[in-house]
Length: 272
Image (tube, rainbow, N blue to C red; front, side, top):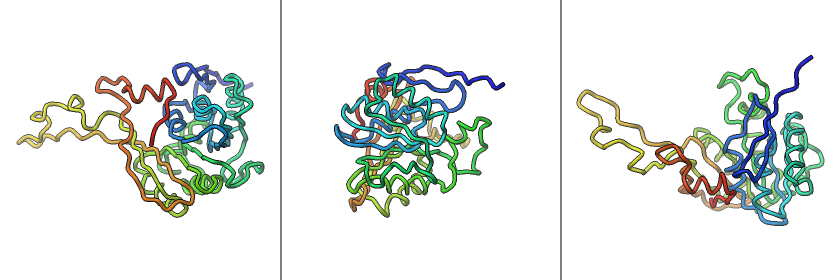
């Protein structure tokens, strides 16, 4: 008989949100917390979380914005069960709801264009580009299924009302593809880089003389790159694209910056 999977009880937002998740398999990091902080939701509005997992983004958003209602959709039933437990543990059963479904077979109860905001943290990798994990949960979280990124964007756009927002976190090297998919039915796109370190901080670099390429051909230190971005679009808008300054996540010593800490530990909003 298979042994039940070990469950850990973890905390987000400095302990304000508790989270049950599998000890092995996909583990929640900062991405869903940053995603939730980016959604411009207000009391009385409805939000859809596509690919909600164990409910991390839903819980963080509901904690930050009292009076909103959040619906989560997740294809893995085991994660849905954990999300339901997490919602109950955090006292949010009246405002949060989880459903089993995927992009090809979404829950029929969900009405298109009925949400004020839609958020998603899609799998970062295309099928066939990376080796799948032996743990199905990890593979589903990291590798796209049928339809690829286009299916994620199409579904998110179908569920948000005109004038509502779609907010997604993704890898920077998929940015061009993501913007092209969003551009046809949305506008006022904002690209918000997530910098691992300050790209302009002098303390993050060595002395200019030691960085410069020397006569022997030594390579100069590469500049800091933002590997992930948050992208937000307004459904039905024709407004122009805007590049934000973004958020610097870490100081030179590896500790979180004050700005990152205010989001990750204190639940403040990100102003895109």
